[in-house]
Structure formats: C-alpha cells, structure tokens
Image (cartoon, rainbow, N blue to C red; front, side):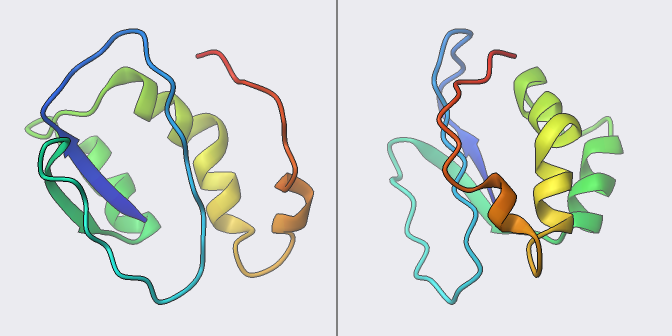
Length: 90
C-alpha cells in the first residue's frame, strides 16, 4: 500500500482507494503529495500506533472498518469486494 502525506487537509472530501497487486510505477503529484512510501500491513499497524505520526481520523476509520479486511483477502477472496457501488460515509 502507498501512503501519502498531503499538503492539504480537508474535512469534506471524497477519497478513492485502489487496491492492486502488481509492479507499478508510483509517481505522486508533488502539488498534492509531500511524502509517500510503500508499507506492509504490519508496518501500517505499527505506524498508526505511533503517536508522533499524524493520520487523519477518516484514514484510521478506513483501516479499521475495511482496509485490513481487504488486505487479508488480497491473495484470495477479494472478488467479494469488487464491483462495490456504495459511497461509504465515515
């Protein structure tokens, strides 16, 4: 998963999560992203517990409610999550 640190902080926003298992070129827009890095699920869980790091509340909600489940099913069973059309309000 790629983590991005944004230059902007918006309370009202629509955010997209793309889950892909592939070798990809990762070139974030420098006007939108200050820092980016790939992390494992374990690394992300450790980072979220680190009080010196700052994450938006919505990102923590997404991790707890959906992201970890998707991550656990990345190698098998992710099909049940494809084709979702619901907008989730956090």
